[in-house]
Image (cartoon, rainbow, N blue to C red; front, side, top):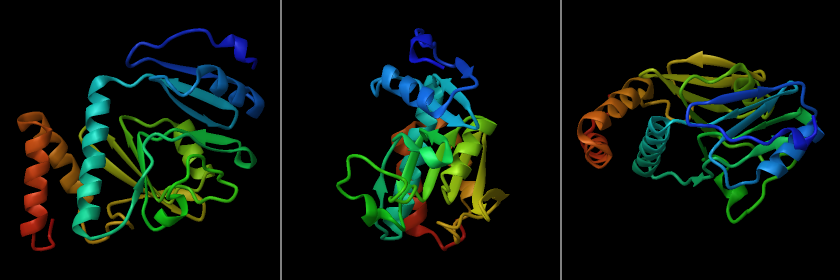
Amino acid sequence: MPATAISFSLEPGQKVTLKPVSWQGFEAILSQLGERRSSRIAYANGILELVAPLPEHERSKVLIADLVKTLLKAQKRRWEPLGSTMFKREGMAAGIEPDDCFYIENYKAVIGKERLDLTVDPPPDLALETDVTSKTELDAYEALRVPELWIYSRGKLKINVLRENQYVEGDRSLIFPDVAVVEIIPRFVQRAREVGVSQTLEEFEALIRGGDGSF
């Protein structure tokens, strides 16, 4: 599909699906849209999706990312956050912009890098998505071999762990195996709606500092 076919803007909450789109067409559309845009892109199996997030989506994804950082800091672990970086690989015919992502085990591999090449660089260890994630997005994450994907939607957190190149949904995170994240993340997202983000983060930090390991 030629890049000239893309000449529209999306309102918050809107989604557009284009198919079939070749890898060359995907690259051309990325180039035309540029990096300074509000929409997010997912590409897999010749299908390209563009989504314009709602404001509530943005608040939730920022809060969940902050909760992840708080956990990592409490565990004295190093990490590199890469936000909504576009991850793509021609050999896998896939590309995705996560709501947020983290390099944790492989954080040293991306320090100081402005561009990533997934033919040589590892994918992020953890990706975050807020709201219902489409099959195209899941297929893209699987193709790019992202080890762990969290999906927060409708007040619940789903953890997808990559096993034999396919996601298996479970109730435990491999990154935080001793933390019941499927329980505490939704609880604190809801708490932020009641008291605001800053107080929620303070309460979360206090829980961790005074926690007995059961949180």
